[in-house]
Amino acid sequence: MKDFGAWKIRMNRSILQYAKNLIRRRKFGTAIQLLQGAEKDYKGSFEFYRMLGMCCLYVGDIDHASYYYSLARSIKIQDAELYIGQAAIFLHRGEVENALPYYLEIEKLAPGNKIAAEALEFLRDNSDRARVRTRLLELIQTGRIERFYPPLGSNPDLIRNGVLTGLLLGVCISVGIVIGGHKSIPKHEKPVTQHEQNIKNLSLTEKEFQNPSDKSVDSMQVSFYLSDKEINKAYEAASRYALDHRDNAALVEINRIKSSNASSVVKAKAETLKSTLFPELVGFDNLKDNYSYEQVEKDPVLYSGCYVIWDGRIANPKVMDNGFLTFTLLVGYVNKRDLIGYVPVEFDKEPERTLEPEKPVRILGIVTYTDGKLVLKERSLHQPLKDTLSLEALH
Image 1 (cartoon, rainbow, N blue to C red):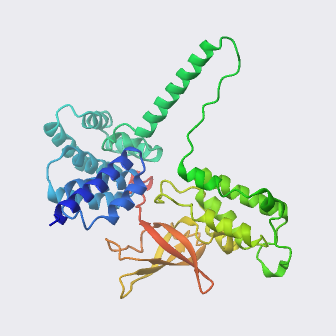
Image 2: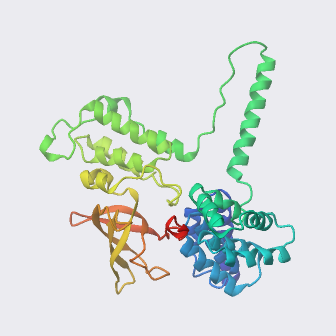
Image 3: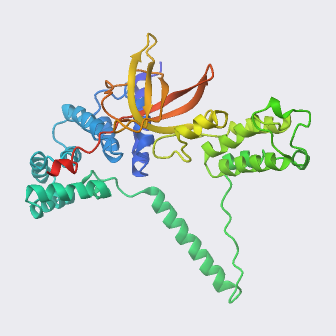
């Protein structure tokens, strides 16, 4: 009989390892989504909660960082990296007196720890309370506060790019030596991935390019009545955006084609091209071409299915009988002003923590329409705190 328990542990380790790789590549939002999706499997895991806390810290979600770090500490009290993260939270809040004991404890646990030593030197150099809070505010606003965060290690993407650049440079130099003073250097061809090849295979044929529209369609029957040139331009743009991993932008052009007088053949190809989009998990840190509420409201057909990131506040949160969460997002209402609009939001599970309507939220969701009305199908809820160390706190 198969040992399903051992198999599950191996599966969980692979998820944790993948998340570690995402963290090293600075893809914190994607790592948060991956880890939160596996939280049931990792209940009681110190490393799991420590990693989640660190990701939230790096994206600026101090509230959730504190929450996950506290869960980690309930499992394992003494850990240098955990202490570094918790001390950084106190620095964010301007609670220097609470951060100091953590750094002193780190020196006992890990003598010579550079982050603790640098933090203690910083606090000694800024012993005046008003001065240290001013300096901390500067670090937070510029992002240099991350020097006191848990270490991430080297970014493999940067290393790989550096190695490839070095190899390419070496090849170019070698070729230059071989061919002497000849100015022509062979172009380095990047290997074509299967994803890229699939997109290229969907290019319009010469016949389709010459006749991309359906001449029998009346302008009143479609949302966009385009010329042959405009249809070809939209299709070429969609393909180019897809190759550049700008899937949102590609989807806008595909929606334009599908809602136009393009021929059924071109529309079918556009639909197939759509199936190649979003091959990777979309997160706060890797979404390209975000669209505003105003843009979506103006041309709803174009943005259907696109991912968007909108800020605001929550109103009327409800957990349905099936466990789904619904609420209204007050778009733009972050500082209790500049309300832009109201958007119903549907989330297919109850959040791990109680939502706090008095705090601003950042939503990653998919634009959909129910009975002709705009609805966000939520993919991630990010509820950051405004930095508690503020200019007002200095006075």
